[in-house]
Length: 86
Image (cartoon, rainbow, N blue to C red; front, side, top):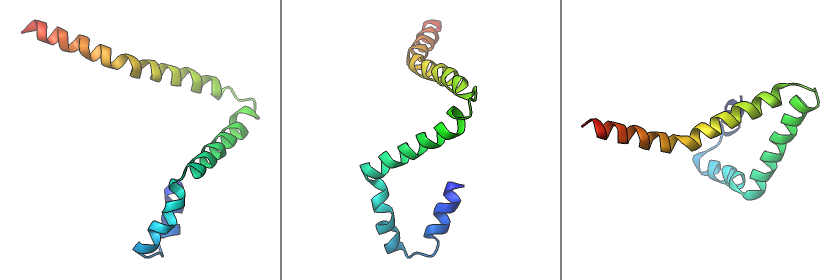
């Protein structure tokens, strides 16, 4: 949905105008406001409605994070095991 809105906004612009339109979006202030907007939306959607979903998000996010942290070590083990076969 966001990409469709973005496309509709730049659809009628010339190529030279797109750069000046996008330049403010790559600033620190814009990134901060986008994160704040996202957190506000998350809070309104899940926290204020007393939903159980944030607990699931923390559990699955922690599981994915621990998998990504352990992945390089697991790859080294598999590489060593494969090298030992030869």
